[in-house]
Image (cartoon, rainbow, N blue to C red; front, side, top):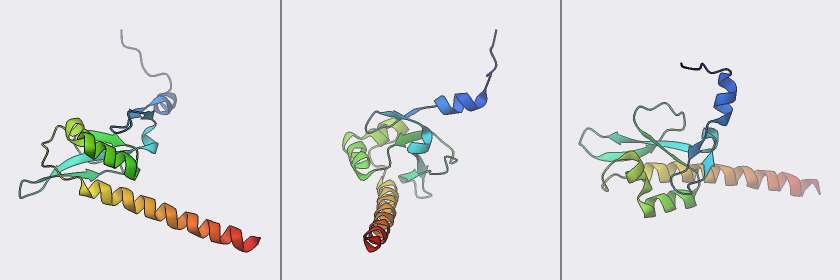
Length: 118
């Protein structure tokens, strides 16, 4: 006998994904999904999927520079997405760096506003 979900929202709240770098389980909203894309010339590139809508197998990672570096070092993207070692991860690194830079700019603005109040 199959049991229907009693409350889909509580199921979504309990949904967890494991970061391929840190191996820590977190809600999907706290992680970045990445997928492998094949270019017309046959090269494979691992790209970020912040909207979590691109087709294909996904790998989840904590969106920090350290986590991406660890995943690269351990070849975790390649293993999780089942692609060869020639797959490029530069798009993911660029995306995470942009997130870090945007966060740093916001923090700098906040600090400037705070210091001008005192």
